[in-house]
Image 1 (cartoon, each protein chain N blue to C red):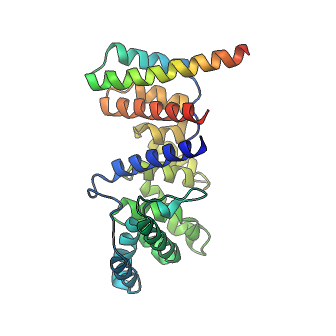
Image 2: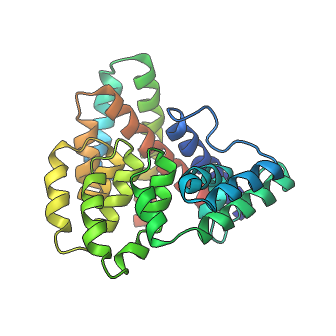
Length: 217
Length: 50
């Protein structure tokens, strides 16, 4: 049963990530070779190609970049190992300067990774001065997954609740609204929307959540 | 995301979408969601009576 749940979770996460990535490229986490991995690592060693290399490595690493107690494996053990190596290099590149630049990157996966590591900036001497304006801008990110993550992080600042309150009236994504307003208000508002895309996204959110609940029992 | 709790108002809104969908796809998705909500309500009713 546990393995079944893990498989469902991995499939769900993969589907969501694949759907999110569609506008960036056809395959967010492409297969790659050892030579391509080494070439991307080499790029990270040079200032002018560092972000390009990190971006490539983030896509090479795929879900292994965020794995915890469950390993995000591929069908091929060799590719799983290579993705793990890419993830390790990306983590080793997480310094204040790189994370700052990645927060402004055009690639949503790079921005998401930077958000994941944004505590580095928060704890740096000039961190809050740099990070907070960036987070405020990212509350308007085109990717709802990014907006959702930003809401969670910006709350811990004294100015955070006011910034969130300013975007709440115009926020339409149910996942983001749940983080802001809680389940009831977010779902009622989204299901009552005149926009069929929002209603369908909300229906899918409820269906997936309840489907997973049933398999967890 | 945490487990969604059962919410009667959400249930009513999904029923309303099933009744007046904008497309066949929306109706299909609403019906699937409705089935999950029915099951959740039943489960909660049973656990209360136990």
